[in-house]
Length: 269
Image 1 (tube, rainbow, N blue to C red):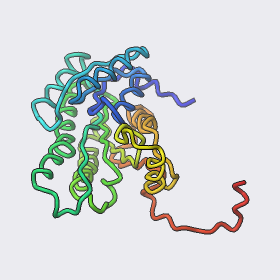
Image 2: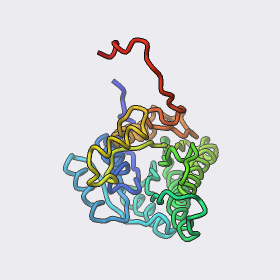
Image 3: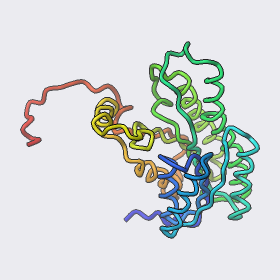
Image 4: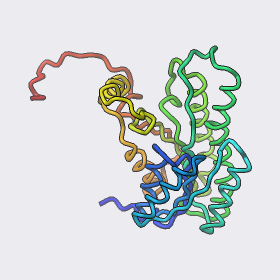
């Protein structure tokens, strides 16, 4: 059995952890004995995540922070250290999306807002978290940035989102080289299309149609798989993994799907 006991007792912050992929990561971390600081701008949902973790025997605290604000990011890191005496890792998950439009139709205000959260927020988190991890003398420090397939592939009608996520991958690779000698790994996870609350009350048949378009498997991803990958990257099993941008997308980033007629389709019967 693979042993993830190396994460037990590690202190980690997960931003944007009130819902979706961030919540899945926070729950997975807590289930494996990590001390988790759940951060989000939505305090009500953030506290619901805390309650869920604690009801399952985990240890977690909530801190409200807007990652686009430097003072709030700094305060978030200070809170973690004051609460638990150290910091071992950060998951930069918080982010926003933008409506799909051609590049010239975005306003500069829309560009600035998205960049302030999706790119500047990752930089601020990395800046202040690394300082705290270094001061903590962590032997298993880590930064995990949640990018996107749009951070490693081009996407029509997603110019500002894709440019921000490409920037996240760039920060990841550069920071990995900066901190490799100091026991800090830096990696990016690049999710495809996942089943989260963003789908809201969308009828299941519509969700399934989108899944067939966006996923070679014809299925949406389970957020728990993001949690499992984030757990691996936080563990001693992944100390030689750094500077990677890892797709988790059912093969979407592998290339183009070309329709083919099987010679022996009866094998599926």
